[in-house]
Length: 143
Image (cartoon, rainbow, N blue to C red; front, side, top):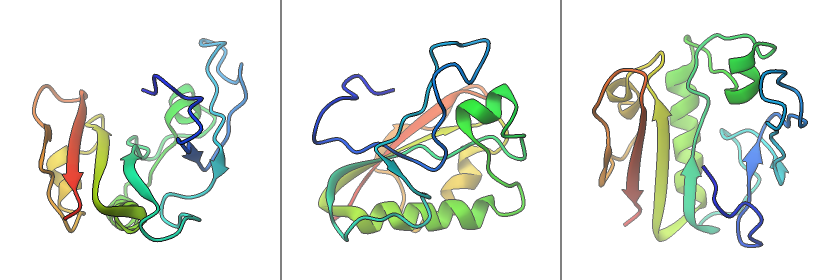
């Protein structure tokens, strides 16, 4: 989703780095984060960022050795509500007052309407409808 990955003012965080070539079917795929950390416990100061993009794993209970697991990661069907709630709260914590939080979700396994129940705030606008399995985008404004 990033058009300018190499900008100095962008920090890319992921829990599991993946080397180029880790997916046989997509030889050029890689995940090379600047910061290796869990979205539920970010190593950043309060109100550090003007814009935060929250793109958590959206596929429940998939093996991290599968193509989908390697590419997107996984989230537990038993703990996703708590995990996403903690992750959203962390994103909100590191977001500056007046900042924008962009949330990306794919309804492959869990409906966006169920995910939004995990958050303390509601999106200002976004794309939350459409066929199942399609990617949804929402924007939250911290006021």
